Amino acid sequence: MIKKLLMLSILVAISLAYPSAVAGQPLNSSVNITQEQAFNAILHGYSVMDEMQNLNFSVSYINDTLIEARKAFAGENCSALIQNIGSVPYTQRDLAFNILNESQNLYVSKKKVGADYPKVIELIEKINETQTLAYKTSDLLTSMELKARDYKRLGVNVTSAENYLLLAKESFKAERYKEAQDYINKADDELESNRADLLTLNILKNMSKSFLQKHWLSILIAFSLTGSFTIAAWELTLKIRARRKLEFLKIEEKTLKNLIKKTQEDYFQKKSIPALIYKIRMDKYYQKLSKIHSQIPVYERLVSGKNNNKKKKTLKI
Image (cartoon, rainbow, N blue to C red; front, top):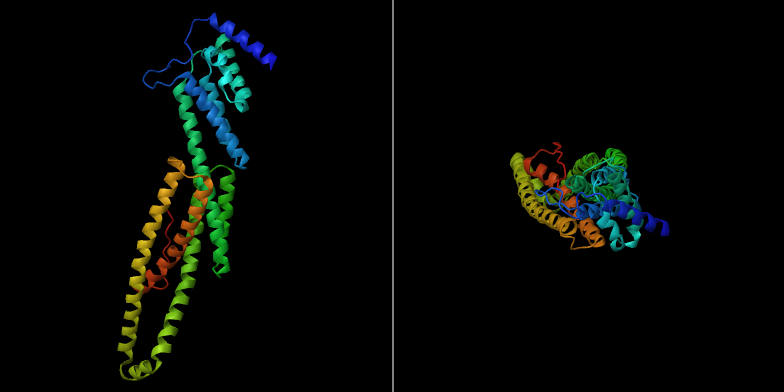
């Protein structure tokens, strides 16, 4: 530590001999990004990387971006920041020293003159966006794995969905988060389509059984008199009941989507709720939404009379 302080003192003394840009002054008046703001942004970027590493996320892209940010930061007189290094949190003090030492050496040796602080901010913003995308993709992947497990217990064929989820995991580990979300949506399509087929058969069987149990004698008499008319009336009754149920499901679907959006805004933008509450709410909302999405295609088929028409619709919130 004494050696580091001695080195800092020497760097400060050398820096004072070079009249150049003063630390803390805006490099670009139109953007108005100071050296201190750019420096703090880089420290924040390293905090993001540490947090993601602790959660076992891959951070290759973020690490490469931080290297670029340090290159953009270097090339100006850092004497003021060096003198004030004691204000940096202890856990990041060594890192701060290395960043400032690196920049100051380049400045003194004239190997690099001039920094690009707006570019530093732009790069750190990309890191923030990557973190948000990674966390959201992780939540979607976890929710879809739980959904596939639940559907499998219900007797739904989940083989194709599980294959898509394996591809999603590979993309996630490679930090291709948007690609991973595409695979997650395809897995959801397969789950909903296969469950819709299963539910269609079960609903028709149950409704038919209930109707026959209650009206078997009337049906027998009516069929002997006007068989075709009775069947048509029966089908019409089923459609009316299905249409009412469908309207209710779509209202409930809209309400849940609004709740999901609000929860995402509260967590990612306003940061007004902790991660644990966010996960609990999202799991609850997605479970309800998944159930509704599995029922809507069934009742749509009953209303239209097309029981074998498969419609795939990507889940987008």
